[in-house]
Length: 284
Ligand SMILES: [Fe+2]
Ligand SMILES: [Fe+2]
Image (cartoon, rainbow, N blue to C red):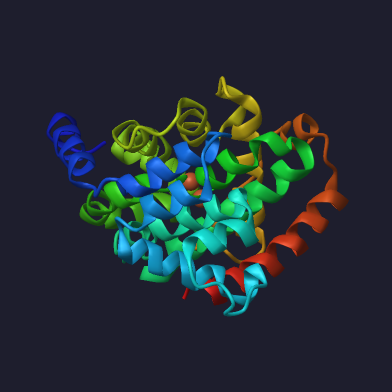
């Protein structure tokens, strides 16, 4: 245990306060996208308020991943051609990229590592949701995108205790996650749930994020299981990022709950690897 837990909690709360807010434009765009009466015109007017996100959205809309290859020249046009769902997805990705492209020395991650993993889990969650419960596709994508945001907050504390972490992981053959719980007294999933509160993220998403390593404990069971499986598939397909990835296991009952078998997992893994490769091309 860290020497002064109370002081650490205070600093962590301060860290949560300091994390940049999810851009207003992204939150408002999600609301508009969920409103059947909203129009592409309203969405375009909203995005014009944040030119850097609007530019990124247009760039992604024109990438090979969305198949439009340079023919889209306005947000309104993008909404028409891509459809609301795809546009919503692009807006989320554009809105959080800056926050998630950070170097995390405590976890030993380069600036692209967390970002690539987050995109992979977003895409994986969406793919699984599209098979199991298409109504969850949009929330699954958003949840996947920000599921590990707690690592941004915990990184300085992990760095302070780096030697203790390494010793624990090696001697106990345990995961980084178990080390967080043992050494800090809580893990990055719990902290992510706090960040979600600050960002006013809907309960269904924050609860799934809180339990993305232990979905059977969640009240939003289905989305938590989807997120957990997407996280696992991302790690086994090489979009993980930690030296202990090989120790990470699916919680027992995950595949049964989702009514999937090993061959489904192989199919999902292949589909995910292909999507992530294309998506990374288009978001850079
Ligand atoms: Fe995680
Ligand atoms: Fe993860």
